[in-house]
Amino acid sequence: MKRSFLLAAVCFAATTMYAQDPTVQDLKNASSKTIAKDPNDTIPRTWKKGGLFNLNFGQTSLSNWAAGGDDLSLNINGFLNVYAFYAKGRTAWDNSLDLALGFVKTTSLGSRKSDDRIELTSKYGYKLTETSKWYASALFNARTQFAPGYLYPKPDSAVKISQFMAPGYVLFSLGFDYKPNKNFSLFLSPISSRWVIVSATGLNSSFPTSKGGVFGVPVGKTVNNEIGAYLSANYMQDIVKNVTYKGKLDLFSNYKHNPENVDVFMTNLLSANIFKGLSFNLGLDLIYDDDARLFGPNKNGARTQFREYIGIGYLKKF
Image 1 (cartoon, one colour):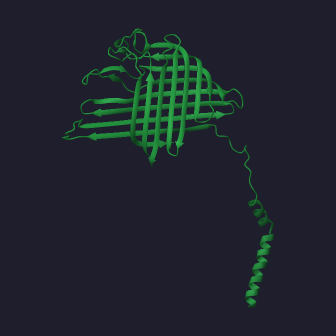
Image 2 (tube, rainbow, N blue to C red):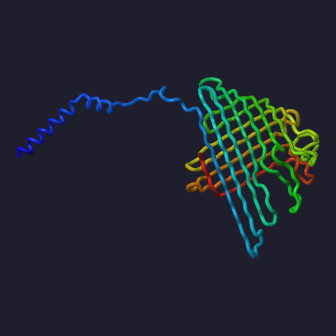
Image 3 (cartoon, rainbow, N blue to C red):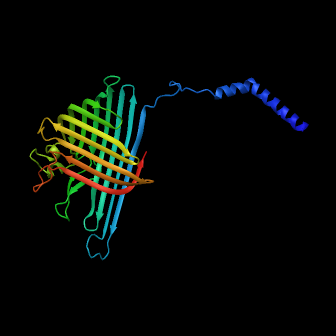
């Protein structure tokens, strides 16, 4: 009993001395303090970078199939969007690149494209006031395709109508950009300059139109300049968890020729990440170009171009 009492007394004395030690007290006091972050300790983040990659694949094979159909059908579509957004103070600089390419192959028709696009957009803006959602902006946009495109008057014949930089569209615009939040922007310009390029030898003379050339570029030339009004609306939003929508609408009215016939370029992509990269994708693209007079019975009329697709594949956001 005496030993237990003595041991307890020694432990109490040691604990008391330890608690009264100045170093221990300083550590305890420091650990109980709330640390406030100094905003000058770190450099504010000015760049936001990321992207979206989507790959869809489908295959059908038939053998002795009474209902009929192609013996083999393959389709593959890929889409990549990368972006880099800069924001500091009243300055904003948005950059994005869209790449898309798709093919369909069947035993009866061979290989044909189902999608093809290269588009680069760079937009620089300066906020009108500290609290304003409007920017005075300059915009650069370039759009073309990877591979040659064909029309098929008959199943066994093909006529080339396009290829890389034929057509190519290069636009420079000055205007105002409205950005109410991080998901939406609306660019408006009363004056823009657009260059339509048809660089392929012989392509321009293959489809003469009322203007004397394909895509509005006169025969004998490779570039046609247009001056007009331009609107560009962009929206990207995670609708619910793992479901993303990305949409874009571009409108251009050429003051020099038929300004009432507005050129339209619209893309829509809805992607749902089902499970660990497995995705469901629904897309709708719409184009109207009054100078793309390649359609109709006589292949000399403009038409609204639609592209709709549904697919299951791989989706990666980064």
